[in-house]
Every structure is written in structure tokens, then in C-alpha cells.
Amino acid sequence: MAKLFVKQAKQYANARPTYPQPLFQFIASKTPSHNLVRDAGTGSGLAAKSLAAIYKNVIGADASEKQLEFAANLPNVRYRHTPPTMSMAELEQMHVNLLRDNYKNIDFPFEPVNGANHTGTFKFVTETAMDFNDFLTYIKSWSAYQTAKAKGVELLGEDMLQKFKLAWGEDGQIVAKLSIYLRIGSAENA
Ligand SMILES: C[S@@+](CC[C@H](N)C(=O)[O-])C[C@H]1O[C@@H](n2cnc3c(N)ncnc32)[C@H](O)[C@@H]1O
Image 1: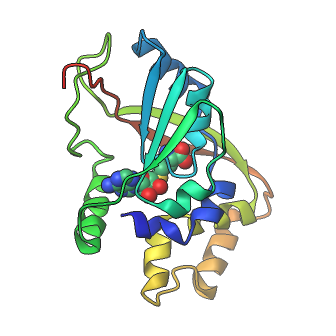
Image 2 (image 1 turned 90 degrees about the vertical axis):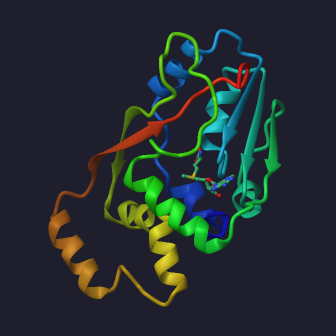
């Protein structure tokens, strides 16, 4: 899956909306010890940065070195490159399936954290103001867009752009609501 994200790594760092504070309050409230947290698929470290304000030590792991290059250097965050063990075809298929069920069926061999009786998904919503160009940059940061592009398919061709423009209207900025799905678990008894 890592390569799916390589091309948009820089765009990604700039275009992704931030995560909502309630997400981190939830994570903090479920983990009595704030000594160590591991952010799996840390990407360009957006979530890791917020976790670094709560936890003494953060490990941000990602299969994409390129993504990690854009992650902020913080004294209590260590980034680890964890190369993928699957083939690209397997990873692509897995990614599609995981997106379909919002990561409910990903192999997640951890125990529920304090006060929870499952490991998720837990849903959060983030709101972000976007103008039309922000919206396009955001869409272009998606792995689906990048994958199609790598295979010679431009999903945001002139026709599609016009349709989006029409739907956007004259509104300028809108507030977009985006869903975030969290899996969280403890490695203590895993
Ligand atoms: C949606 S992005 C993560 C966003 C990130 N958490 C943030 O705060 O912006 C998913 C990330 O998972 C990484 N990834 C995908 N499959 C992986 C795997 N098997 N092992 C480690 N990282 C993986 C990708 O390289 C990508 O950076």
C-alpha cells in the first residue's frame, strides 16, 4: 500500500484536514499510562504531532519512506520505516476492501483499551473550511486518484472538473464534514 501514497506524499502533508481534538481526548482517556503510543500508518505524522502533546514517547511507523520524509521532527517522536511484506497487488486489494468496511475487518490483534469492550472502529468527524481548489487538492491526495493516474487514467478530467465546479456553485468556501474511523488497542496482553 505504501507506494500508493508515495506520489501524493507532499500534497498529502499540505492538503489533509487536521484531526479533531475529541479524537485525541478519547485516545488519552482510554490509556491510563501516557508513556508510549504507536501510531501505525503515521504517514506525514499529522496525528503523531497531536499524540506527541499527550504521550511521553511516540513511535510513528509507516511503510512509505516518502511519507515519513514530510513528517515533522519532534523530540519525543521516533519515526520507523516498516517495509510492507505483501505484494503491490495484494496491498491494493486489501486497501480497497478495508476502505469499503472502514477498517472494521483489518487484522488487529490487540486487546480493547481501558473502558472499551472492542477495538473499534470508533467514528469521529472533523470539519474543515475548503474552497474549490482546496477540495481538488484534497481529492488529488487520495490513493484512489493517484493509483488511477499511475495507470494512465485522469479521474479529474475536464468533464469531471466542470461537474464539480457546477455542483460547488458560487459559494466560495464551504465547511466540509469528514468521517474518521479509529481502531485502538493495547499491546499489553496481545
Ligand atoms: C491515511 S494515511 C495515514 C494518515 C496519518 N495517520 C496522518 O496522521 O496523516 C495511511 C498511511 O498508512 C501507510 N500504510 C499503508 N499500509 C501500511 C502497512 N502495511 N504498514 C505500514 N504503513 C502502511 C501508508 O503509507 C500511509 O502513509
